[in-house]
Amino acid sequence: MREVSVPPLVNVAPETNITDLVIRQADKPSNPALFAKLNGAGQWQDIHAREFLADVSALAKGLIANGVQAGDRVGIMSRTRYEWALVDFAIWFAGGISVPIYETSSPSQVAWNLGDSGAVAAFAEAAHHEDIIRQAVAGQDLGTVANVWQLEGGGLDLLRSAGTGVSDEELEARRSKAVLADTATIIYTSGTTGRPKGCELTHGNFVELSDNALASLGDVVNERARTIMFLPLAHVFARFISVLAVAAGAQVAHTPDIKNLLADLQSFKPSFILAVPRVFEKVYNSALSKAEDGGKGGIFHKAADTAIAYSKARQTGSIGLGLRLQHALFDRLVYGKLRAAMGGQVTHAVSGGGPLGERLGHFFQGIGLQILEGYGLTETTAPVSVNTPSLIKIGTVGAPLPGNAVRIADDGEILAKGVCVMKGYYKREDLQDETFVDGWFRTGDIGELDEQGFLKITGRKKEIIVTAGGKNVVPALLEDQIRADALVSQVVVLGDNRPFIGALVTLDEEALPGWLERHGLPAGTSLQEAAGNPVVRAAVQELISKANQSVSQAEAIKSFRIVDSDFTEASGHLTPSMKVKRAQVMKDFETVIEEMYAAPKVS
Image (cartoon, rainbow, N blue to C red; front, side, top):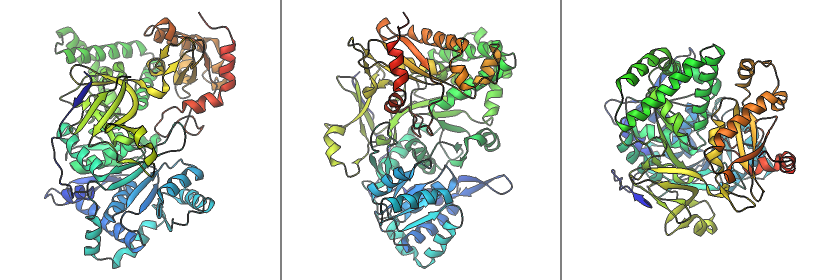
């Protein structure tokens, strides 16, 4: 199949905008709890739709009183927290356009986002975020940024007070001014190369996509559902789910520090979660490491194999009695404990931002957590396609959501069209012809559609390696398999214009001590020492050899080097959404790469 198009199930009136989603919930007699926030006593406090509407309105009035006009851009620089969503909606209620900024951004990055978008104001989470914004404003002479308000330190109270003189009628005129076709937000791509581009996403992108997604995902996201947000709200994936939850009347809690995630999951007890594949890899690997450390590795491996077999059998519609009994046993011994660690109520997870891998998908489905893997980009407001409870095929990223379409170009590139696709790149009309072809958005990813219309991602077009011998190699096919092991943190497969395929590997610092101990090595061995240890190297070689079995001889990794430090966002080698900046890695580790190719390759 080369193309699949799914008609919309919900048609939205053209005069609608995102703020109508809040009004929809506040008008319900049930007045659903849209958010939850930890109070001073460490308990989750419900924030109902009418309460949220009242506060959003008060803050919007404050923005209007401070000179924010309809269509003005306002930045948000903060970790994931309730107030992020609060000011996001306040900006929309005031008729403005929000510009998310990753809270880890440098002054120069902040300056680019605020300057390129022409922002007139910004929200900063805390004093040090405000300092970075003010450095950016002063350093680049961004005279348009007139105000910076802190989410902490009384900034929101100042806004509430400032808006008391703004009438309800003026607010309503502002709130209702935007229509589906108008820009709601400008999200700057975190960018693995070059300057970030501002993706103009409209009110229609969010509203039409949300309402059509709910037509397919209503069993997961509804007024009874709860989720806890820990991904950065500056990223389109978390942002879309945040709006989707309001559209559904589902409740969202936030945890700004991933270190508190386990405790927050157990206290809030979400019914669904969202995460990038690396999070699910970490959950699996940490559970495996814990079992092996406790001498129960054999039981865990059998339990994992059973879960995978159970899920596969369930997908084909035939589960034998022996497998059912074995699954029931491991549900008591292993699976139930894993679900309890995530709060005990979670039944579904939405995964995006990269390929999950078929084995992990079957494992989690087999333990009772159905992972709905989807596909999308910032430019497509997150999901183009997603697996749903009623339409799922593990190993794919699902079929297009209602209102969306997917086409596979002659060279294998995935093209997208529909309610999800952005208006364009802000102030970059010169990129229009490069970005769209015959009205279809060029995603830059390569993939295939099966006969049932399910999409499978096979790689990133610009990451395809062409060896000196002319062989095309998709690095993700090897990287995903190697990185799935607890010992490994990151893998970068390389070999462009080289005589053979090589790889750089980093070790997982958290999993390393336990791994070393189980292999008779001192747990206190440093990352640098472990990188040169022959036992560690042999283990990595074994992983690579196993991955090589899935590709041809010409595509196989012939040599590798273990790097003695990890690739992180702080080191400049990962984007905030945990994608590897390949060009930066190759630049920073050029000496290691050249040494690898100068040495004799492993046959």
